[in-house]
Length: 187
Image (cartoon, rainbow, N blue to C red; front, side, top):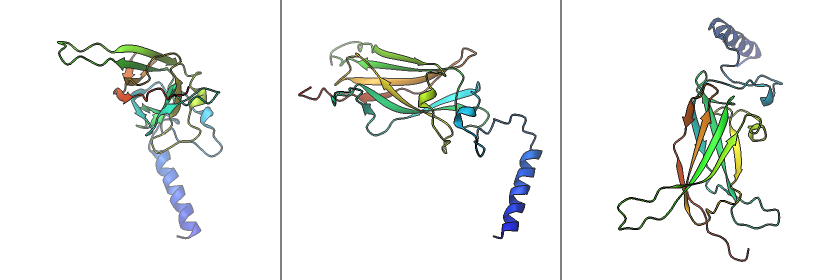
C-alpha cells in the first residue's frame, strides 16, 4: 500500500466517523494520542460487571515474607452501555467474600454462608487500580484486595464483584467460588 493510499483511507475513515452523528465524544472510550487514562471521564452508564481471576489469585501482603495468603487479585471491567467495553465508573465497586461452612451429610438444610469481608471502593479509592492503557476488553481495574483478619485459610469462599451506580442501581457479577489454600507451616 502506498503512503497516499494510506492517507486517503485515514481521511475517508475519519470522514465516515464524522458523518456518523455520534454526539458523545467519549462513547468509544478510545484513547487519543497523548491522552492519559486519568483524563477520561467517569461513566454513569455501566450495565455489566465482568471479572477475571488469574490461575493463582492469592496474595501475601506481609512485609516479613510470610507466604500465607492474605488476599487476592481480580481484574474487573465495568461495561459501558455506549461502547460495550470496559470503562471507569462513577460509582462504587463493592466486593463481598463469603465463607461456606462444610455441611453435615445428614443436615436437612445447608448452613448459610458467612460474610467474611466487604470492600467498598469509591472512584477515588480505585485510582491506583486503574489500567494504565486500554485493552481489547476496554479499560479496567486490577484490584488487589487484603482480607485483613478474616479467617478463610483452608475454606471454600465465594467472591462477588458489584458496581453501585449513582442512580442507585446495583449491577452484580456472578459469584466465583474458590478453595483458599491452608496455612503454610512454619509461619
